[in-house]
Length: 106
Image 1 (tube, helix red, strand yellow):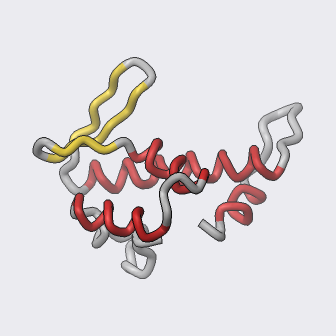
Image 2 (image 1 turned 180 degrees about the vertical axis):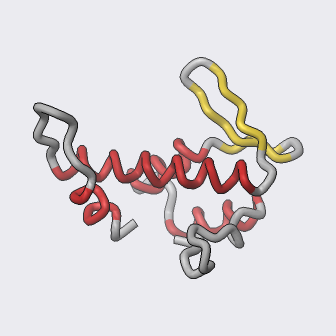
């Protein structure tokens, strides 16, 4: 989470718009959630799309990666709670990079 402001600063602003640091951080968070959703899909989770709602589901356990990342960014979900939930869902061993160095336990 500490790197989101730096990541957000590197994402170009939309044409004719100057984004504030919080807006840039939100965009970085959405990018992170997209990466998480793709990692889940690659690990056998099924995406479920409903109007204004995206969820990934494995067996009977639905999880919305966008709301999860948003909750973590807003402080509604502590780092400990994030790690616990990832482990409960079996997503903590998912790697973010091909070399396996970056993990979801943040």
